[in-house]
Image (cartoon, rainbow over all chains, first blue to last red; front, side, top):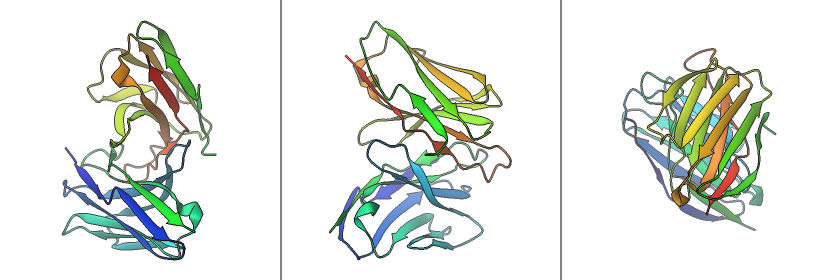
Length: 113
Length: 115
């Protein structure tokens, strides 16, 4: 089955700096890669996703890049703010079942004021 | 709010108790999921229901029993649990309009502690 590795497990940045979280996946047939943000006491919330027919997608301060050849994708947050502090999860779909999301182990992002 | 609610938010139970977790989605979705989130581990998919039919069971022990009476409600019945079952249990829903567009929306979770 699919295996998703996520790094780093913890990340601290100064407010205003950029943050980058990286994930690799094992199943070359995976074609959908969402990113979720989980704040304390809440469930994961989708913040951005990318599909295998594009290499990059942006939404204001958040961007995701996908390299299908290398089987990795990354989340980029620019101009970080304290409210960006949360746990971020990447996920990928294995072939044949878009519902079977395989999640990475999460990155605790702390934005220092 | 995501439109997915879960009750109770916190639950403490002994190993011999029987309890149930409830999930309700107000999004008109036709697929619902149970996930287990343990500390320092990725989210683990437990069960998937599509149009009220169970389509996935990821080798979950029989002490966890799901029930989906309609497309808006999902239950997880618990009995004779073990302390290692203590975790955050998350419910999610999605719309099965296309295999490539079913974004999953999560509820806030139930924090379960088994004594």
